[in-house]
Length: 243
Image (cartoon, rainbow, N blue to C red; front, top):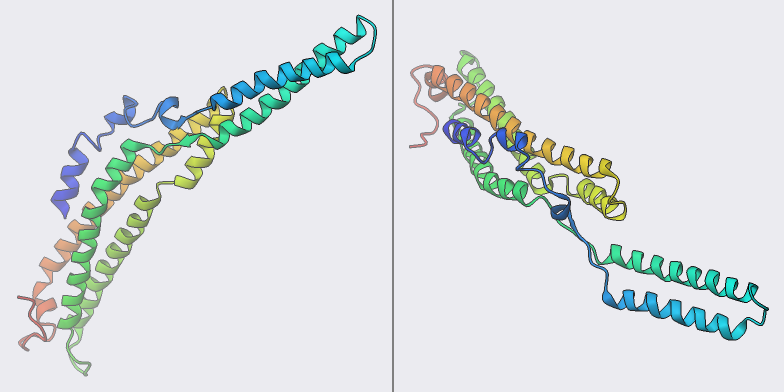
């Protein structure tokens, strides 16, 4: 477990240089793909022509008022249908996730899940080594409980991180990307998405560093107290042997 996370932290995929070089952060084109149907473009032009023609046939005012009304009416129709096309653009917009972050999450997920399962088996082994409750020397049992508590804490941490990997701030990111599509000239939305992606990438590194250190501590704790764990009451036979 320790060596696995150490290798990942030292690998190019999880290197901090990817942040410095901007490799992990998406471009505007990678955040969203916009499409406006040609049908709606045609409707915009057709609506403008129809509106102008209708105005010409219905207005009986003398020039220049009739001409002025035709111009104003045509612009109004164009704007109205343009807004409909703008709404349609939102409906036809694909919000894409950060593919590079998703690949890292897919790489981490089976590793973290495997280690969580190993911790579960280790906790079960120690639980089966706990002798029956009785008076006398229970110091070894206390040692077992301390080790179990450490295992439980690390297992819960791994479980929480698995949940985080399956989410990756998807909802918040989608809302920001949607706002960016509607207002592509506002750089604040793009910066907010970059900050969110940076946070998720750093969270992966923080998790791996924390698990590596905690696993080191757990291994050291077990090895220093292996006799008390296997034989909590001295020369008594262990209640269970995992081998």
